[in-house]
Image 1: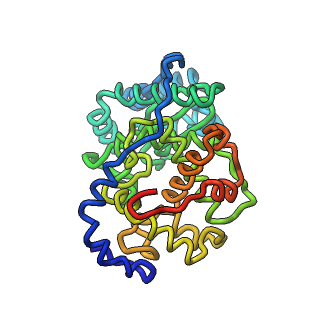
Image 2: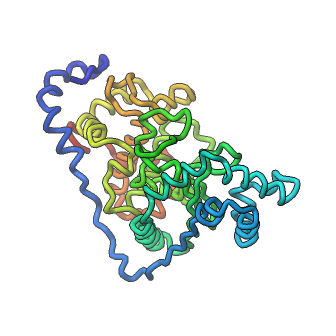
Length: 349
C-alpha cells in the first residue's frame, strides 16, 4: 500500500480499492495523438560508423591516427583535440584506453548486446523522418557508436550530441548482462541504461535544439515546461514507442502517476511549488531521485518533468492551431501553463 503525505491521506481507502486495477490499465494506456503521414518525407539513410571496431578493436596507433584524420570533427569535439599539445599525445591517450585490459571486456560485452544494430538504426531512420516532417530544415546527423570506459580517459559519455554528429556510448547501454556499469550510478538510473532507451534518450537531447527557454525565468514551472516540451518532442518523433520509455518510468511508476495525478497536482498547488525558485526545492521535483516522498513514499522521481509533459500535452489539445514547431519555440512557460487549462481528474487528464 502506498504511504501518502498529509494532503492525500484522505484518499487512502479509495486508493487501496483502485490501486491494483488502475495501475495496470493506466500503464497500458498508450494512446497517442493522431500519427501524421510521413509517406511524402523522403527516406533517410542514416550513416552509422562503428568507432569501437575502427579504433578499439585494432589496438593500433596507426588505426587511431587514420580515424582521426578521416573524422576531424570527432577528433575536435569528441576527443577534445585542443586539450592536447600535439596529435601524437592525443593518439597516445586514446591508445592507452584501447590497450587497457578492461576495454577488452567492454568490447566483448557490447558486441554481444549490439551484435545486430539494425533495429536501432531503423528506429533512428524513422524518428529522423518524423523530425524532418515537423522541422523541414532538419539535417540528419551522422551516428557514431563507441565504448569509452565511462569517460575515465577524458572522453565519452552516454550520448554526445553536436550539430553534425552523435556519439552513442554503447558501454553505458549494455544493460544488466554487462560486466561493468557506469560508476557511482544508482540502480534507478541504471534501469534506463538499456538498448531500448538509446533512441528516445538521443531524441530527448536533440529536442534541445528546438526547445526555446527563457533563462531569466528561474521558476520550477519553467523547468517543468522545458522538460514537458522535451518529452512531447520525443513522443512525437517516436509515436510507436511506449510512454514508459519516453518518461523513463516502469509500468508501475507510470501507472501511479496517471492514476493519482490529481493528488500530485494537489501537492503542487497547496505548496505553491510552480513559482518556487529555490534550487534545492526545485531539484526535489525535477531532479534525479528514486522517489519524491514529499508527495508520497512511492511517487516516482522526476515527477515534475512528467507533470510538465501533461501540461504541454493538454496545451496542444486546447490550442489546436498551434503547431509542434510553434509550441517548441514558445519560451513563456506561464503562458503555456495558463492556456493549457490543465486540471487533472482521478485516473487521467
